[in-house]
Image (cartoon, rainbow, N blue to C red; front, side):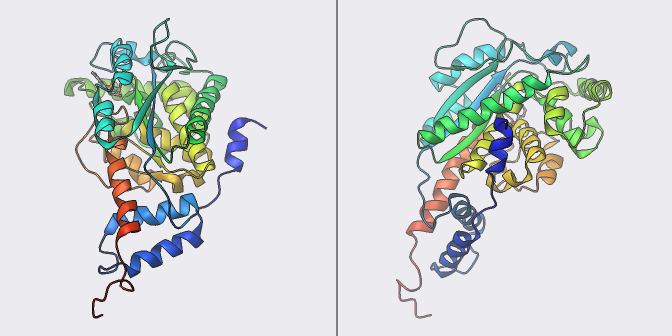
Length: 348
Ligand SMILES: Cc1cc2ncn([C@H]3O[C@H](COP(=O)(O)O)[C@@H](O)[C@H]3O)c2cc1C
Ligand SMILES: O=C(O)c1cccnc1
């Protein structure tokens, strides 16, 4: 049995007994029932994921995956491709967006190279390079099926490595110039909509070039004909290595009953691939923020997720996931420490 198959066999529904217990506790806390809104929902989801009434959410990490994209040569991204490498070197120093937010919230960040255009390993970055850059999806498949499977396996392996190190909450992130293009392609294929509907400016593409970006995605889909019901096929034909690995982390976390926190647009595409492979993993996802990319709406609708932060962020790297760690910890802290009507005489 393959790693993906065996992981999928271990993804079970949430534990409703503990969710009921958490709900009952929430209903006894000294507040009007339901008044803590999504803070309540998160605590109940966590109880179902961990399968216990109380849990610890302090040890957290963002796993980010970096690689380059062959489709860059079509002029779909406004920045130089070597920003993937240069910004990857900044991750271990925690001087970038996800790094500073992680410092603020007290989380770790680990970058994993799954296909950066460079020959030397990068200090502080785990080397799992599949190959330097995907192929240009506008001319043929972005990768082979074997590479797509490997990308997902790397994500599963990384999630399990950090879960063994006792991390209790895992966020996903990425770094890869041009990766909003394969992300939009994946969303378009799964939604069955025209790429135009889900194509945005990414890291600052000029408005005049949006039509071109959508046309490149349209061509890639026409040439490759990805099967909308086969997540691995979609990933292979119009995806990216980092997107596959992020999907792998989602599957790995789900099988190990650990919450996985989504980030922005690219993570939604990864989530759609993961759900396509095993729909049960949706229960283990926590959507952090609502990406400012226009395709975010469609992707979130498909996922049936409603992020609790709306910050107009469109950075990626795992920055929104890191920011949301604070909210998840707050949800847990309040759930655990607030007193109940049995403990305080409120005359009610
Ligand atoms: C300096 C810099 C830092 C970044 N950090 C994340 N991204 C984000 O932008 C890229 C996707 O946008 P597009 O598809 O338009 O290239 C990804 O690397 C994503 O992580 C960055 C982009 C830049 C330029
Ligand atoms: O939503 C995101 O995470 C995003 C959007 C644009 C570019 N990079 C990331």
